[in-house]
Image (cartoon, rainbow, N blue to C red; front, side, top):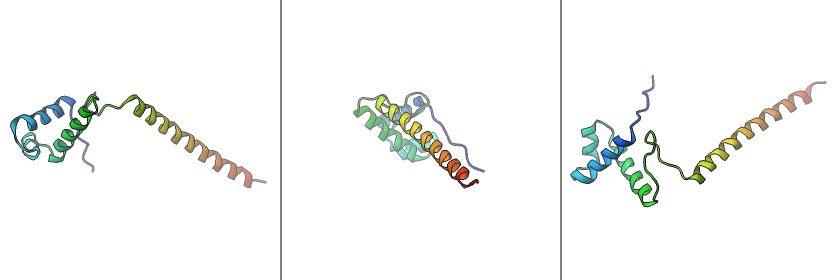
Length: 102
């Protein structure tokens, strides 16, 4: 059986990073105190640093990083392209199948 993926709220992530910055404790110590793997706190701190430097909001919604409008559009286009490729592959297979029939 697989272990379900843990999800943390934006508030929880902000609080963990705030504790690292204000208490002087390491990310590993804060993670131990919170009962989570240390790499989570390290990653959240790095994400907060890069997102803040870029002037974008951090941990929006359910704690997912905010995407710029261009990134959202890129993801939509990539999704559409994948669907078009799948449709093309199905049509190729159908064409090959019907070409074999007398």
